[in-house]
Image (cartoon, rainbow, N blue to C red; front, side, top):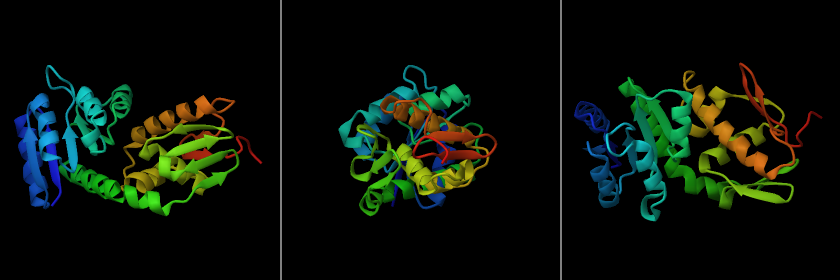
Length: 237
């Protein structure tokens, strides 16, 4: 049985999530204190953490960073659940290492769908590393065993999500891939209202690629109102 830890200073939200996740077959525990919550992660080793941001003396961004910098729990999936819904807040959340971001008020069915998708994804990561072979198109080479991308002779590491986004774009090189398709391919769910998640990760991915390529924004093109297209040689053929 998957164990899920909720860290939120609103006990009513903790109880709401706990009851509904347990009805769905999960083991759910919670803490209303972020410091005690982090200690619970070390002690209980949950399969997934649901984390609020605004919790008094310690905010959720700092907790997420601490999780990602602690070797024994660094790969724990994190869903950030917060009232902070601006794009810059989401950017800070993903910069802190969270895997998904949901804004309050939220629908409990959406949260359960995101939990299931993220658990499925985290369970498949090692398998996907074994299945995926090195993929090379044009100037770009993806190396699964190290989650790296190589542009000509320079290499940089990607997060698993960035890697999977680039992998999905490379599989359809030259063609448009919609944001909805990327959400389905990478996160395992459809949500037309969650375009900011893709936008933030595309921004991160572009920034990393820009650091190892000769020209900025050369390879991933935005199709406004549609999605994204990868040009492996950096230009239309």
